[in-house]
Length: 352
Image 1: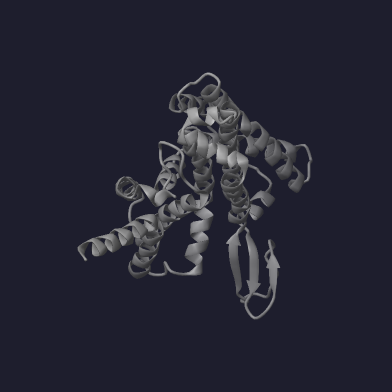
Image 2: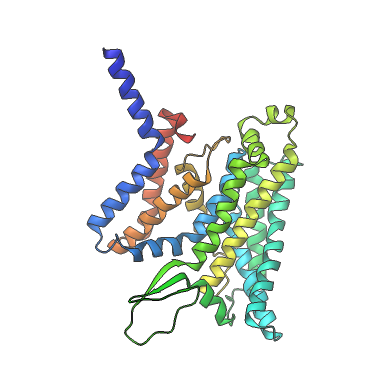
């Protein structure tokens, strides 16, 4: 009888361990809904999505690398580097007389291409020269930071096309109360007629790429190779996986997502700064670990990582609405990280 009770108790605890991230998020939302007036509403959801977009993208970038057993410390400053490149290019093309939409699109394409370079170098250092990921990416952090500062000369970019801000601060759907809706463009209505804004554009753009690469990681041969490399690199080599090629690809993807986050930063804030992504690195790594990815590699999913991002974003939003100092967030995030490590220690299968 006792054996049956213990078995059921262990099963329940195991199920809770597997789903603790979702349960924690629900409890967090419930807590702030009670403590912080106005937390549980559409506006808060919009705020979380808008301000958390860069972390969603950087965490996805970090996940690919961590699944292989590595780490990418450069993503925050690759984001900053991309804000500098894209903002500078937008100003240059605008001054050349290029239409605003052309200036923005051309700048985005060029930035994404240039933004692949740090990831390519990181990948070659790790895969070909066998430089430890920590050293390779930390060195790249310094390089891209220095280049960004040289380009900016201490002066943030300005005079970007106003259309960039319209896109970055717009919404996917507008609903006119009383009838009518519009996609991407705010409808012209009479003064006093309320318009409900649904899902920020930047969140839509980000999640299109996140969904695509969530599928790539879980459902493609390349994704299987990534997990195999993180699980046991020697076994992956014996299985015929081109480990060097796939590692380079992973670091290039990480740089791509960081560059995309930088472009979204420019569209949101209409400026470029070398240190724009410095504060996002801790949140990105924390989200991956909270989401259940092992720092030793071989496990982790995009959707659990997004849950980790939401925990951090909801925490920051709730604290801001309560008037709590921003630095308190870092203490709480550190505490949640420790809790995640403890859960992993006692429920190692919750990552699956």
